[in-house]
Structure formats: C-alpha cells, structure tokens
Length: 197
Image (cartoon, rainbow, N blue to C red; front, top):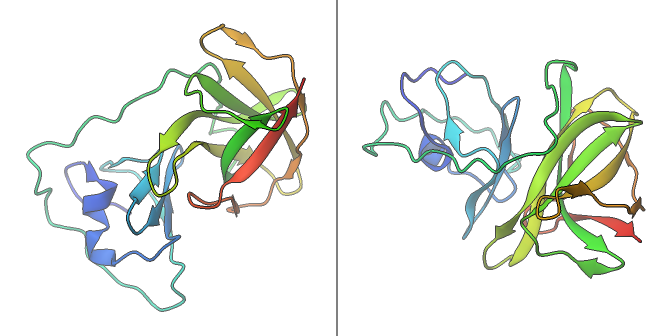
C-alpha cells in the first residue's frame, strides 16, 4: 500500500529501500525497474495516494523500509504522457505480466519514439507501450509493456506508427506465453520483438 497523503516520485518513495539492481515495482497500469546509474526506469514515475503497488526484491535478503513522511520536493513533476493508439482495459483480467523490449524490423533495431507496440491474444488487445529512449549506459530505445491475461495465453505483437497514423503491415516473429507476474527482459538486457516485412 501507499499510505501517504501526497504523490511523490518513485525515486523518492523507495530511497529508504536501498534498491538492488533489478528491483521492480508495478501498479495496475505501469511499472519501473531499478539499476544503479539509471535509477528507476519505466512507465511508472509517480506514487499516487490510494493506489496499491507490488515490489519485487531481487537481493535475496529480507528488506524493510519506511516511506518518507512527506515529499521533500515542492511538487512532483507531472508524468510525461505519450499518446497511445492502443489502450487496453486493465479491469478485464486480474493478472498481469511485463515485457521490456527492443524492436527490430528485418533485423534493424528501431530507434523511433513514434512506434507503439501492441500486445494481442488473438484479436484482443492485452497491452501496449511506446518506444522510449533509455540513456547511458543502455543507450537503447525500449518499450515497457504491461500485458493483462491468464496463464498460457499466447501473446503476439503488432506495431503502430504514430507518424503515419497506421498499423504497420508486418509479420511478428515472436510469441510470448503469458505467465502471472513474470517479467520478460530487463532495462539493461531487454527482450527483442522481431518483425519482418
């Protein structure tokens, strides 16, 4: 739970947790992963009063922490909201998983923040994420995708180009089996979703 009356950044909220590389926090709609030198990276930027969160501790040791009693910042920066073509309904399924991925088309890694990856089970939208730049030492364009579903659902992917306002006519070469609370890929070692023309 997040029992604080005011919003604060993920960095500030978990400063007392002494996060380890690979530690992970998610809400119902977004998530972030911690790596030293990068901090918390992903779609979850702000902790919101009344919301619940799940924290994955990768250190293997018991961890306790206390949220700061109040934000030390005068205000929390509003999250940059990237326009989405696909908007999944997270209320349809009680479970989710996450994928941190790069995208290649005909073996060429894509570096275009106008590309959005949609995750589908059959024709049903299950998740989406825009490519965003992750700075050094990663220096890659990655999509952070929250996928909703049930165990063993077969998840395939499509690409939408916001510049052309169209779904690209591509063949997806990857299928992911849905597993509750699984994380595929990481900020420093992302999965790759491959498409071909």
